[in-house]
Length: 281
Ligand code: AMP
Ligand code: ZN
Ligand code: FE
Ligand code: FE
Image (cartoon, rainbow, N blue to C red; front, side):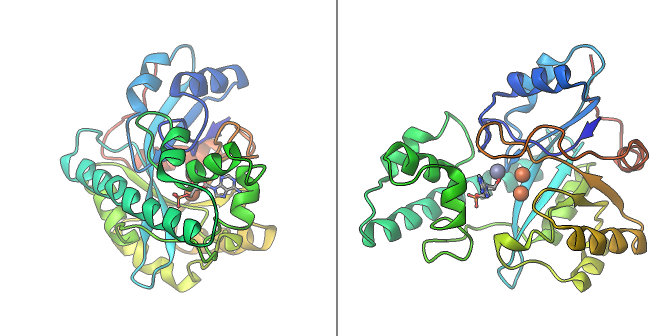
């Protein structure tokens, strides 16, 4: 079983990297992608936990913004964790998340919602990439809402009046950065329309020119029609097709391994990295 997109408490998941790897082993996952938002800080602990048959595809889910302001998530897998340009890009994006959160909190306070930056910081695990799920957790802790899911269906949705974007590379810049660091780039849930504005089918050509390797087709946020369209685009552009859970521990309904990548697709993807970087025991 191959699941290439998961999160730990180094971003907005709730399992530590060790717990995640252990869960993956007990489920019989052979290849696990660990893709925390805009960080590689979980890699070391995950690598230290590896035993038995499991292979780790270490990576990151890079927050991107198109020139038209569309939010895009780009999975970078198997890149060189020591690449300086990549580390700088990730750090800048993480840095931009703090003023963004301050603005969101400010908007909510102006609307009479009793929430503060201290509440958000209290909900964020040490060293985790700051994100809306931590704001959601702070609101749950204060009894304002019941769950992260409730937050994302309302106040924290991309279409909400409280939403603020943060500085981020464009998808083309992120792909170029991932590839020059030797890794492979897979666009995450590109047609997850309920999150807000999404890419158009015609946008993929530019991404392929930049070096895009694959498309995440099977993902719970994409309906059968959206998956069918993406599968067609992938076949037409000779891109790898992936499926993954986007597991976030108890922070989201997604369960580990709920969507999978076919072994042949994984082999094709891995062969496009500039060297073998899978971590195994
Ligand atoms: P941010 O990166 O701060 O813009 O926050 C986006 C994150 O919120 C994404 O990583 C999603 O995984 C997470 N998210 C989106 N929808 C939900 C939901 N319904 N429940 C929990 N987390 C969600
Ligand atoms: Zn997330
Ligand atoms: Fe995502
Ligand atoms: Fe994700």
